[in-house]
Amino acid sequence: MNENTRTSMENAIGEIKVGQKSDIPITKYDRTDSLFAIIYIVLGYGFVRYFILDFYYESFGIIFPVYSVAYIATVLIYAKRKGITPQKETYFWIAVMLCVAFLFKIENFFRLVVQTVVAAYFTVMVGGMYSGGTSSYIWADMIHTFVGAPFSHFVSIFPAFFGLFKKKTKTEKNKLSPAVAGVIMAVVALWFIMPLLIKADNNFLSGISDFINKLISDFNPGYTLFTITVHTMLTVPVACYLYSLGYSSMNKTGRLFSINELDSGREKFRISPAVTLKVFLIIVCVVYIMFIALQGEYLLGAFAGKLYHGMTYAQYARTGFFELCQVSVINLTLLTIANLLIKKEETKAIKLPMVVLCILSLLLLSTAMAKMVMYIAAYGLTVKRVISTVFLIWLIAVFVMCTIRLYKPFNLVKTAVLTGAVMFCVLFSFDIGMESHKFNEKYGFEEKTVEFETVFDGTVYLPAKSEINWINVTHSENKTYGYTLSDINKFYRIMQNADYTDLSSVQDFPMREEYYIITIYPDMFENKPDVVIYCYEKDGQIFLEQPYNGIWKTQENLPYMFDNYRF
Image (cartoon, rainbow, N blue to C red; front, side):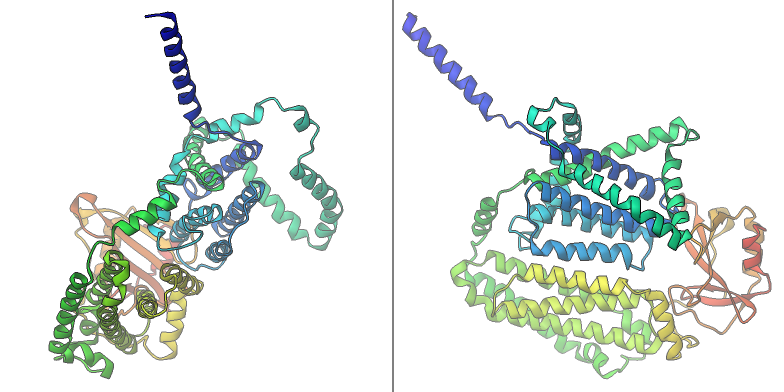
């Protein structure tokens, strides 16, 4: 090999090495990323401390809204520092988060779950979805929100955090951070404001003092090494998840697909000729028409308020209700598949059968709604009936939107999602149980008797004592109240000696302001459901209520025994 050949090969290898090195993506973290790494560590610790390890802390109603507002502020400030202008839909999801934080009247656990999902979607929305906002690519946005964004930079919080300790350039050393300047201005202003607020209301000072004492109690010497270790072990993955979600959204990284790939992939699915889909939809519609024709008396009787062949209201309302809802969801899926597979130039050819399928779906949903209205008219409202009714209304609205979209194209997915969010935000902003109680009391449903599919013999249903793991008692109003009964035999004797009344239980829980919740937990190996019994006082008498089974009266003062731990 001569010298010239060797030299040219070495140059070529050198070019390859240089080229390979330049293609390796190097993640860089600016000062904003590093500062927010600290903030996300604090948010991660707060989530672990108040929503995982101390979920039943009595101040959940205060901590939860404060944490929600802090998270919203963190994301918006992070976006501003990155030069991102949030799109208009972002403010809708901020409103939803605030509604969940301040107005929702549901169990704390479900509030937390809903808020966690909405907060993740809101974070990615600030950074920008695949098509700007909620769109037909919502499935890709969901994958990015819950998989791509939070895990693509899962450990990035560590290099971002340690980036704070890098040497600053001369320009950075001499430059005062705008945030620091704002803090200094706030301190000066509060120097004059705080004394005036304290003089105006002494409770303000005590409230601030209690809140600070609660926070600093986490760091007192009494904390064991074990507690600190558990906090740290749980805070690290939570902080990593939150920071990766925020960093990926603000830097527009971690996407598993590109918008061009999604567009081209969507076009590749348009492979079916109009004839195939038209025949498919027509056959489905014919089956539905035959079903409605054969079952006309049974299905359409609900519109006239007539029961079918001696059925009770409960039997008629429950029979087929969920099946009709499931069929409607399947129809929605069929419409989506047809719209996805049809060739673009042949879309108009399947418009008519799609409209017919929408109308038939609306008829089935209307039948389910009529059944529910009959059930409510007979027995009143419960939490489950109200939620089911609102869900039905949303499904009907979606099929109306599908029908309109066939003639006037618009963003159906976004409209359906936002409509559903508004409906359920309004719904859960009310105490459904209490409002149902007021409705039932006003229209006389409280004392109505009701027939059930399952007939009971007037005895409280209780598992065998040998199958019991433990029995727990909680109070409807006092969230910190609760203990486990130690004398199960004594409790069983009281329950079995209770007198059966002619009152009927037609609610998921008693419509009383205060009551005790007795939960019987069978042995986990028995594979049997938990048994719930409610105890309350009414007109000086003690009642035991087992939902949809019956109401019993006892001479034992159970509330006194529960309050004084006499078990």
